[in-house]
Image: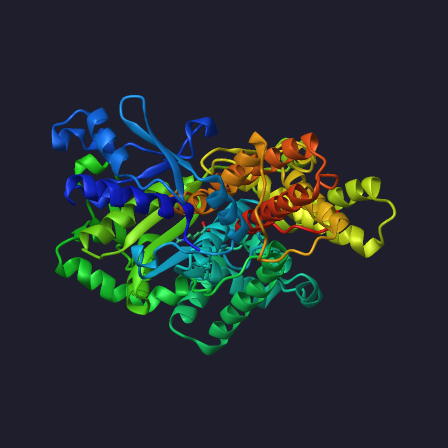
Length: 569
Ligand code: ARG
């Protein structure tokens, strides 16, 4: 089934072509949903924007176009508004049959628009450390963007760019060899690796031989020493196994775990290319790339005077490797905004190299806690696991109050879906650049713009549908929607697919959250005004069909945010 905006714009394009003998560029012809339903359903500004080109008054152009618009099965009315807008009203019967066939999961946008692979680099923690809340935002924002791309049937790869290479491994190996507590390592490997790392830092302040020892171990690792390589692999694999436990809880999945180490081999050729193309130059023994003053960027350090490569070198090698591996179109990186300059620098270098890839840095602000118990722990030290546990246990308390009669396993399942959903929604529903103030009471509330509220609306619709016990079939006779709120709901549903395009283009999950919240609120207005179950025959069927579509759309929208729903709550 065609997306509704495409149906209407096809009719408009026909009329414009007919009026101006195909002289107007189709890319200029756009339509929008109107702000007020009593103005009609759609609006176009084509007469206004082509008025200069055609040296004609916009109203005159609009009149000509309107006279060529096919009025009939789909469009019932086309009118001129204001200085030259054209408003369209859809034929109710056509709109209702469109609603009847409407399926939010169907995607019919042009796939040719964006060819090639998009790689999304997100979560990307540094090995041998437990994840803390600072990793949450990258993980769930990245996952949501990935889901949008998948939904739009684009080729997408979810890549976890692990911090798995660097000087810390020399220290870890020394710590491991000297102080490892095997039992602790068994029970909580990352906690133990963190402990020996901290111990290394403390001990090396007193024991001068430790740092050189760590350097020797690091050098051995870099030169491929089998014992150290195996140890390093063990750190990486253990870390991934631990991270996967959290990713499972969050419903997050990656296609690749290509950490920084993966790009080591590609670095020499990047450096060579930078030198050959005269982009990088020597400066006090180091290799740097300088930028034009207008860029307001510090020079990008490619290689230090001791030969060591840097974060930017590795990221450039990463682009190169991905261009070799995929038919690469876009690289999206999701990190907090403190890394902005780093990304600007190597994006610019990639451009100077003439690499044809679309690099996008998706940034976000910090997450802070309203709860003093949480905020009193300094900075980032709140572990992600602690946060998720807390969310589930708080949700469980609420479920126990609301639904004391459910079985324990049902209560736990609801608490899991509500708790994890609340954590994700509190983040994804806000503009990602803002600092997030995390407030348990607000996030877990069943009122207001929260995930429990939306999940509850979904469950409520399921409960109405169960009570009505109606068997949907495709051959519905005429549907009836008389009230304004029903009209508004139908139109809101038909906007779903364009909302996803907008969210994906801007990498802003909050666009979807806003949409789903608005839909849920509109449903509640409808639900409070009308008794669906007690409606008469055809009206009841029409209403059941409408709310079924609303539920499907809420579910699909939340799924794009990585949030689950339940049929009963
Ligand atoms: N490991 C880095 C960190 O924890 C994030 C990596 C982001 N991706 C990248 N290609 N630089 O800050």
